[in-house]
Length: 185
Image 1: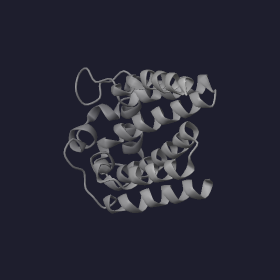
Image 2 (image 1 turned 90 degrees about the horizontal axis):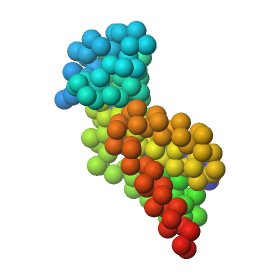
Image 3 (image 1 turned 135 degrees about the vertical axis):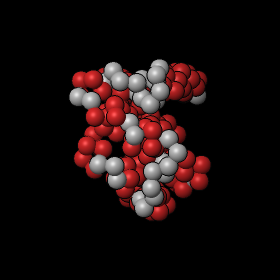
């Protein structure tokens, strides 16, 4: 099982490694390069809106501030974090599908398609796409931890997902529906 996980992660890294040499694009500039809020002290970053007033994404704000503090305004490190994050999400998806379906081949093929699908380009290649990657990763981790009976860790991952992107609030409904369906089988 770990060989398949490693293979999926490696494939995801290879497919999106071409983005490592990219510059910042689109929303990257106002969110990272020109965003003076990323220079605020850590305690203030938690409460600072993400790019626009009304968007509260403290996980994103803190990660982008940390990356910019370590790497400066160099896009390579932002892209590297996104590519590594995508690979981690692929592995989490594979693990979750193994737990939910109990069918290794189906889980592997589904995660394989997820790893290489061009739809993910919009989330992986721009630096601000990290919010999508983190939200998905923390949601998958929360769901996987829930399936394995680790509810406190699952709740912590769920809060991190919400702090990455507010659309993560849908996770409890997904889990409820999946749990309800599995009890009917």
